[in-house]
Length: 354
Image 1 (cartoon, rainbow, N blue to C red):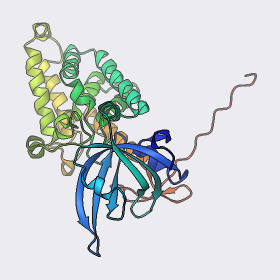
Image 2: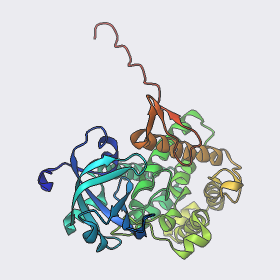
Image 3: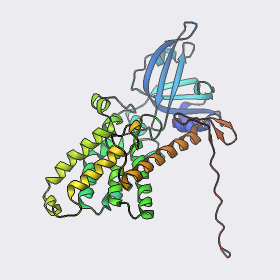
Image 4: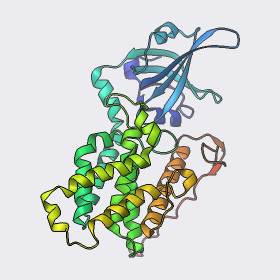
C-alpha cells in the first residue's frame, strides 16, 4: 500500500459509492460508536466495531487473523480513528478494509470530522441561514419573535441534532437540512394555496420536530445520539408542545407584548393553532400523533414533512443502495419494495438564435 498520508481521504458515504467501482486504497476518518467482542461459530474471537462519520455508518469485523486485531481490541467507544486500507465490497457484510493501517486522530482532525466534509458543512450552514431568513420574513409579530427566540436560545443544539435515528436525515445536523427544505416546500405550497396561513406554516415547520433537540441530539464531541429518560418517556411531540408553551410564556412577558393585546387573531388562538401543528404532524394516531390534523395548515404540514422524509430516503438509496439490475435498486428499510431509478428530465431546447 502507498504511504497512508498520500491516499485520498473519503467519507463513509463516498467510500460506499466508489469503492466497488474504483478498487484502490483510501483513507477513512471515523468514530468508534460501538464495540462488541464476539466469537465465530468455530470459537475464534473477533471484534465488531460500528464506525460513524457525518455522512453514514458501517460495521467493521476484525478477526483474530487481522494484523491490527490487538490494536483494535484496545479501542474504546467514542475514540476517533483513521483507517487506511484497500476497501473490498464483500456483498453480504458490506465494505471490508484489507491490509488496514490504523491510527488515532489529532484534536484538529476530530473537530474537522465532527463538522462534516466541506460540502456537507457548507450545505448545512446555508440551510441554517435559510431557516433564519424564513423566520425573519414572518409578518405576525408573535410568531416572528417566537421563532427568533427559539433560534437565539437553541441554535447550537439545533445544529447538531438529527431528524431521526434511522430512515431519513439520520445524521449530525440532519434536522437543519430537513427543516430548511420543508420551509422551501411550505413557502411554495402557500403560493399555490392562498388559503394557507404562510406565517403559521413557516413557524409550524420550525417547531414541528423541536422536541428532537432532546430526543435525537448528538453529543457535543460525538456522532452518538445518547438516550435520555425524559425523551424516552415523553417523545418529541409532547416535548415540542412543552418547548413552545415555555417560550410563549417568556414571549408574553416582553414589553412589546402589550402592543399585541388587540391584534387579530388573538394571541392565544395563534398559540393554539401552532400547538396543533406540532401535535398533528404525524398525521395518524397509530404513528404517534395525539390528535388528527384539523386545519388546512396541519394537513399541509403533515404532507410536506412526509414528502421530504420519503424523498431523502430515496436519495440515500440511490446514493448507496445495491443495484439488482440496471435501474433497479434493492429495497431499504422501511420501504417495502425495490425502487427504480427516476426518469431523466429532457433538457429544454433553447430558442432559435441563441
